[in-house]
Length: 158
Image 1 (cartoon, one colour):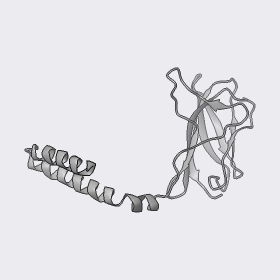
Image 2: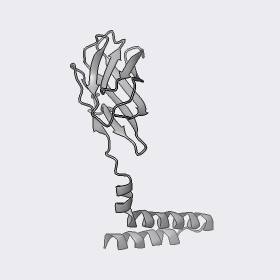
Image 3: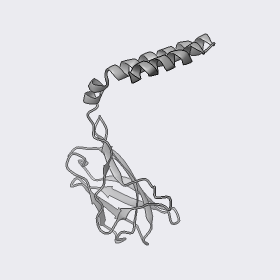
Image 4: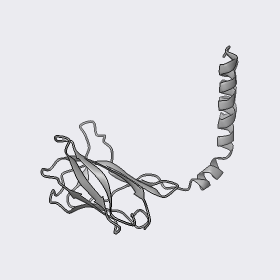
């Protein structure tokens, strides 16, 4: 029933468009939406990729949350071609060189040590973030407890 109401509403909207080019564009969009809607299950199966997962932070590092209660959570995700993406804001952890921030699970680990980035929101210092084949994410160059923006993209082999 809802689909019927939506189609009628879109039909009325489309009939109010006078420009033939815009009408053609809207018709194509509606047709593509119909195709996507009809094939949602198949598309979901083809793209059977889990979404963003939270990093399990270690050594007193924690998710940074700003005054509004929002921030970029420390997470990782693997896309359909095997690249892992890491993102997030963290705060409050151990600042000794070689500190492990988190450990990525099997299936999200690089075949060799890869470097990502970590920038400090205090002065904008760029720090070293390394991700090891055992999944350990290690930080170097942090001198004070601060908020760090972390990120990396690499191909997962393990």
